[in-house]
Image 1 (cartoon, rainbow, N blue to C red):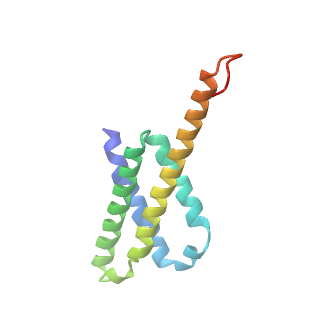
Image 2 (image 1 turned 90 degrees about the vertical axis):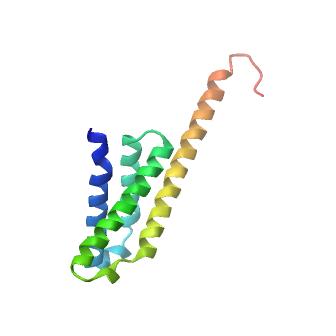
Image 3 (image 1 turned 120 degrees about the horizontal axis):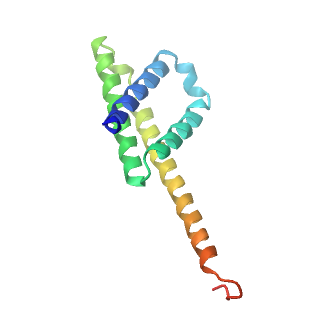
Length: 125
């Protein structure tokens, strides 16, 4: 039951971060956003093990956060404050980082498998 709350919780958190960045735009210029992206993707990898689920949760979180931000700003008639280019680039960066981590995991797994399959005295092919 608790697994179904993760997309909602992460979407609200995403919306809160974007609204903070809209109110205080100076924080966008610091490298903390990229580091925060790596931390969020790392947490996402801890909760969801398969790469398809990670990508789906990432996209769902981004879409839900964008929707929440838009709805909250629509209440104050400030829909123009949302920068869709920045949100889309963050979504693509997150997908790229997820695929990069998945590639590193696959490489580690294949190296381990190759190392395990070579018995002592056997020729390395």
